[in-house]
Image (cartoon, rainbow, N blue to C red; front, side, top):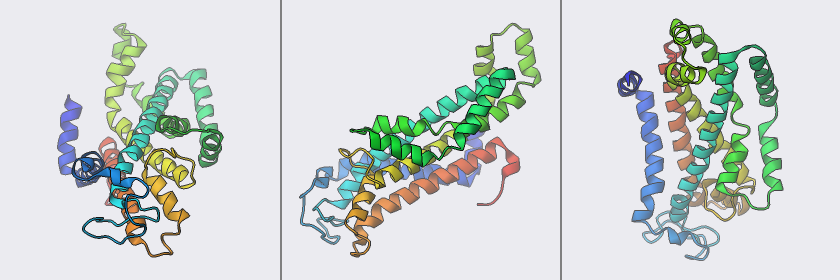
Length: 284
């Protein structure tokens, strides 16, 4: 509870965290609340005449196949966020488990897990993701999240492990051990609460990395073909050379949503890092 109170106070004072959360909330509300105010059925092929410029009927115009761009962006935002959140959660959970086991127990367990993490982190992730996605006949949101998470846990594992190594030498951990507390209870009730800022910062960074990886795969045509996502919109933008054709209303909106989301996540990640380690405070 003390951590939550401190986090709330610091978030109010820390303009980066406040602004970052606000930008992320804007994107989330755009995708969640948008369908209640705009007919997303217009995202279907042939909903309107191809390549119409923005008008009162089509606020963001239409694409080369007659899709309403605004409806398409609204429908694609939640799917993109789901991939990022699922992959981020899975990546941080796996990384945290590895970090707690390696850092808390040390010895040969730490050595094996540390070497495994260091080896896997050097593997070119995007190459593995492209190969894995291209081998699948049908790619769903959940499957893409699992593929991305399988290569997203090493970063959080390294960061969290270093903090666990420090905390396990603290007096309150020794007192808990002498009191006969089991290891799992010490980890969850004593060590983990003190690492919440690092866990949250790792989660935000993992979500940003997962979103970047998912959009990259979708731009290459390896994402969920049956669902509207921001990466899929950008794929069709490239496929029909919308940039060269001057269709700014087509390529501008999805890219703007992605930029707002990444700026929000970046600011939130920096702010959480500063809360976890005040020595990192610098102006961004």
